[in-house]
Length: 462
Image: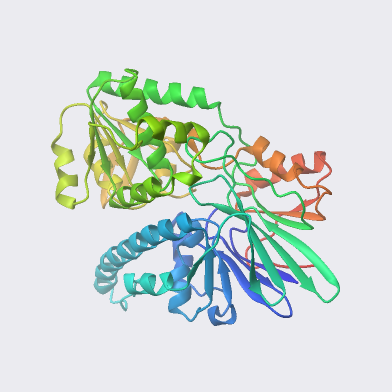
C-alpha cells in the first residue's frame, strides 16, 4: 500500500492524496491551492499523476481547498465515481460553479496583460461545463455506512463536524492476508460549533492522516466569541461606519447570519441593514436550509420556534452586480458580509476599495488567512496595500475573531487523536503550516503518539 501526497503537504491548501494498492487506485480530495501567486500558479500545473489511472475519489467536504480542482481532474480524464455526503455534493456544486466563473474572469484579465507583453493567452483552469460533467460522477453516501471503493478497499464516513456534510473517512484495506485500517481526518470541526454537530470519533486505525491547521492555537470559549462580535458590531454602529466582514460562503456566512439575527431579536445590537453580498453564500444558505438533519440540538430547537434561522427583516441578499454597487452609496451604519473570506477574489475587494481608507469603517476577519493573500496582509497590519490595481491606505479599524474558525484547535485535535485504541502505528500530519505542525507533533509525542509530516509529492509506503 502506498499513499502519495499531492497537496496539503506542510501547507493548508490543495488537499489531494492518492491511496494505491496492487488492486486499486483511489484519490482523497482534489482541492485548489490558495495563497500568493506562486501557490495559485500550482493550480495550472500538472497534477503529478494521470487522472485516468484512478477509479474513485473520496470528497471529504465542499471547501474550495478540498474540491476546487475536481472539475480539472475530470477535464483531463478522470471518469471514476466521486463519493460524498448529500450536503457535500450540493455545496460542492455551488463552490465549483463559482470557481469556474472566477476562473473565466481572472483569465480574461490575465490575457489582457499577456497580450500587452506579447505572451500567448491562457485558458481557464476549467469552465462551468466541466463542473456539470463532474456532477454526473457523484455518488451520495451516508455517515456510518460501509461502501466499496476498490477491489480491496471498503470505506466508511464519520461526521467530521467541520461544515455541513463534512466527513472523516476510514479505509479497510485487505491485501492478501494482511488488513490495514487507514483513517483520513479531513478537516475536523470545533466542539460546540455554532451550527453543526460535534466531531464523531474514529477509534481504530493503523495509520492516520490528520489535519493540523491549528496545531498550536486555542480558540476562545463560544461565549467570548459572541461577546466580541456584539462589541465590534456596536462599536462600528457607534462610529456611524460600515462593518465589512470578508466571509467564506459555506458555514461561516451562515453562522454569522444566525448570530446577527439572534442578537437583533434579543436587543443586543441595534437594528441596521445587513447585506449578504455574495451570490455563492446566498445559494449555499439555501442548501443549509435543506439539510437541517446535520444541525446540533440547539439549532434544531431554534428551528422549532423560527423556521428560517438565517433570515430576519433587516437582511438584504444582493445577487446582482447592480445591487452590490448600490451598497457603496449607503452612508448609514450597516453590515456587509461578502466573499471571499481571504479577500483574494469576489465582491469584498470592491467594498474594501470603496471603504478601507475611511477610519469610520471596520473590517472584521472571522477565518483563517492563508499566507500571501490580501486578507493575510491586511490582518497583519499593513498600512498600504495594492487593491484592484490601486495603492490604497488602510485607515479602517481592523478586527479579528479567530474563534469562529471551523477548524478544531490543538486541544480538540489532540483529543481526536487520543480516541484511537490501540494507538496508531503512525500519525501523518498534513494540512498545516510547519509552525503549527512542529508544536503539535511534540504534543502527540508527549502522549506517546508517533507522528511524521510528509512533504508535497512524497510517497508513504506501509
